[in-house]
Length: 139
Ligand SMILES: [Zn+2]
Ligand SMILES: [Zn+2]
Image 1 (spheres, rainbow, N blue to C red):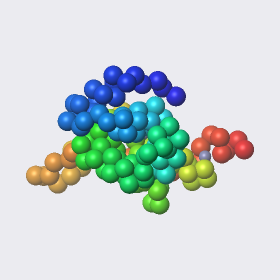
Image 2: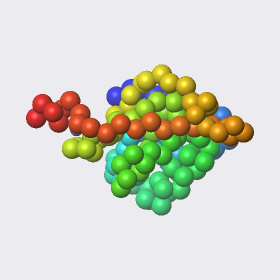
Image 3: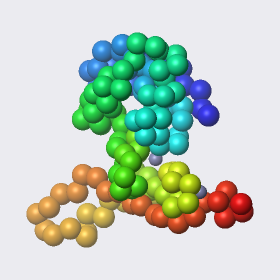
């Protein structure tokens, strides 16, 4: 787990014009510290211990706002559960079909502008792998 300072979290929110409330800061910090691509339920369950006033609706609305502002990414690799990612640089994801964990793959690739028809502009690309993770293979 990476340790993220309060200042980093505040700066990231303010850069996007979002007021750094206690709840917003806690949600963003959680996502930056845990590169496990948690679901909304995981985020809510973890944070509601620290912030008893937190509601699932607040978590939902906050995640929506963060996604809209490009602060985080929603990953739909699973087909069932949406996973949230605090890291928005271009990177690939690996879904383990046994434990359903989503891993980062820091692969350098360019957005393939040449692959789209003339006159189209690519602004984002998602690369997903599925398979079995090391832990599940050695169990
Ligand atoms: Zn696994
Ligand atoms: Zn990721």
